Image (cartoon, rainbow, N blue to C red; front, top):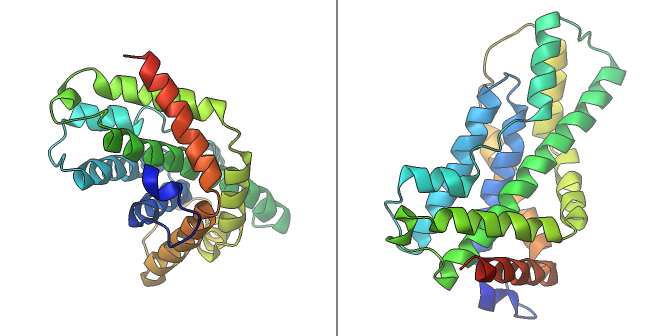
Length: 237
């Protein structure tokens, strides 16, 4: 992806689209209004993303421990899921417009945080594997920890607000998110996982396509992100 991001024009590389798809899926995980179930779904999406990125480079049987480290599986708690679970148990959510707006804001923030984390980590993981920072042999050792630490350090040094604002606009316009907020407020005592509907895959794909195109217009940001990662992974060796 390093060479692709330097091109002044052209279509986004397919790997960017796949990372965007996983990022959107991560962002929609907080829509599951059941404490811990949303966190489980988020871990699953992130670990699938890691396996997909590794498989693109021929690393088809990564150790589960390495996958968990690279996916940041320990970073799973979503504020929306925790608060919504509390309110559900206390039956304190009468369906009023003020609650709907408040929870929409809360949920959008959760969606943005989860999607942004997965997007940055997925992009830099792809860059790391393309550089040769991970191999079938090094996945068995300490390399996953070093790569993950370098990714975290790189992300801390960039101003992610433009990307988060972009994600916020995407999720605010999501019919799926609005529908889930409405349903959760209407039935605060229902403790069943949500059932995916047919049109959800189409909306997720649409959001991912829009995200990919928007990211491709911010290639300078992605290049700067790569440079910071390279600085930190270099000092870790």
